[in-house]
Each structure stands twice: as C-alpha cells, then as structure tokens.
Image 1 (cartoon, rainbow, N blue to C red):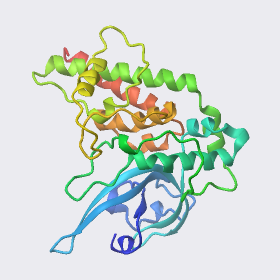
Image 2 (cartoon, rainbow, N blue to C red; image 1 turned 120 degrees about the vertical axis):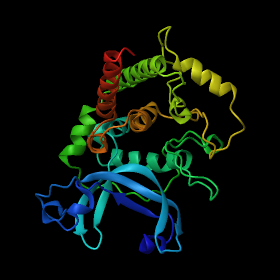
Image 3 (tube, rainbow, N blue to C red; image 1 turned 90 degrees about the horizontal axis):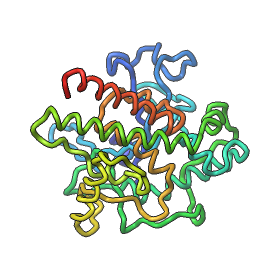
Length: 305
C-alpha cells in the first residue's frame, strides 16, 4: 500500500481472493501466471479511501469495493501479485447499451456509465467517518446521465471474448425484474421470520431499502414498503456520509438498481463471495441471493420461526 499511495489519487487496486489465504502465498498451484492456476481470476476493483500509518509501522487502510474485475495477464506473484485487469460489467449493462451487436462500443458505454455514477454511489468518506458497509447515494450530486460528456479512465478491450458475449446474450430485462422482485419478497419473509423468533427488531440497512423499486406491486403483507416510507419521512437534510435512508436519484437506471441490490443484499444474508463475483449477469447473482434467502427461511421455519 505504501507504494500505491505514493502515487496520485484515485488509489486503485484489484482484490482477488487467494484460497487458503497466506498459506498458499508462493504456491505454484495458485500462481496466476500459470494457465492451469487454481486461483480465481475474478475479483473486485478497490479504492483506498483513507489510510493511517500506525506507530508500530502497521497500516490501517479504509477501502471501498467499486466494480467487478478480472485478471487478464498476471505480471508477478511476489512479494505481492501484480497483473493487468479488466473491469467486467454485468450482461445487463452490455445489453442496455446494445448487446452483442454493439461490441466493443457497448462495453465502453457501460464503463463510462460506471464512472459517471461512481460520483454518486461511492464517495470517499471524510476523515471523521468510517466507510459504510453498504454505500449510499449522494443525492446532491445526482443527475441523470445520457452517456455524453465524460472522459473515462477505464478502457474497454479491442477484442471481446466469448464470456462477455455470452453474458450479454444471457441478459433478459424481464427475468431481471422478476428476480429483483423475488429477492425483495424473500428478504421481507426472512425479516418477518426473524422478528417472530427474536424479541428485538431485526435491522435492515437503510441503504438497501433505498434500492426498493418504487413501482413494485407488493402484496398486502409486504412490510418493507412501510419501513421505507417511515424512513423517508424522517430523512434529515442530505448528508452523503450519514448512514441513513436515501433513494436513488432521478434517471437512475433500473439495471444499476438491481445490480447494486445483487451485491448489497449479501451484507444481510452472508455467504461465499466468489460465486457472487463469478456471476456473469445481475439476474444470475440475484438467483444466488434468492437461494441463500430460501435456505435461511427454511432453516427458521424448521425451528418454528
């Protein structure tokens, strides 16, 4: 990190999980330079939001996860790994900008959209605040984006591989809306089951409730709309660093709202991170979350909850 933060901001790096952790550092079986490496190649683009060097020379580092990425070419593995990486949009983002008939332009447009909305979605915290587990919107900075007027720092590939094309082909707006709704319904059921077995209310991160679709035709016993409405009535003046309920800005695309839910919901349900990162589409990631929610609900039902 010392080498990273000596350079100009933004301080970006890729985090790719190493199975077995430090026990496999230097293990040739997990060397990403080997085509047969057992290590995953999909990870997270991270930004160092703040850091402090401790008196004992250790570092305290505050980071934010910004985007899904993939290792394209490993450059070295010791003393720490270095590689060329590529930001990987979900299939729905490719589809939103034209799909397989528009490669690589649709990839460039998806990356520009990421960068434009990052100004709203991932603000570096001030020195007096921690990084929130789930980022929320800066409504004061939020404007609809039409794809114009932004020079990007991420680059789309000149040639597009089969994985990206398959992800774009798999994107289905109707399926995405269905999966998004199913996750909300099952999350509502989980919270009701938890409240029935716990004397204390189960907190729902307000940042997640801000992602509730505004036009959902919810059943009568769906409780989260009332919770969101109550939070909305108590919202303080906009403060992007206050962990409170904030709805997406005007013009916020539905595929981005669903994509944020597909990551944020794991802060509630827990589970393995790698399958979430490996999912090629938002709908696929929401299906993983739905299975996790169903397992949790079934477990509570078996216990009488």
